[in-house]
Length: 79
Image (tube, rainbow, N blue to C red; front, side, top):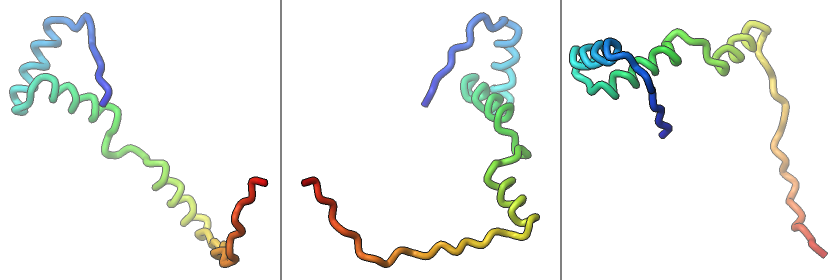
């Protein structure tokens, strides 16, 4: 896992983070992780795979006609 160091955090902000963590029963570090997760990964974010699947459905779906290759493979020769 990656780690991040935040320098020059004001005393007021640090006290507020400690108080918020105590209200939620977390350590200050766990509270900061939760805040960052909520900020960069909101529940209502658009996920690329879901968006592409929805677009595919809107245009009538996609049919794949690729069949499996049943021919035997020839061994490689390095000579």
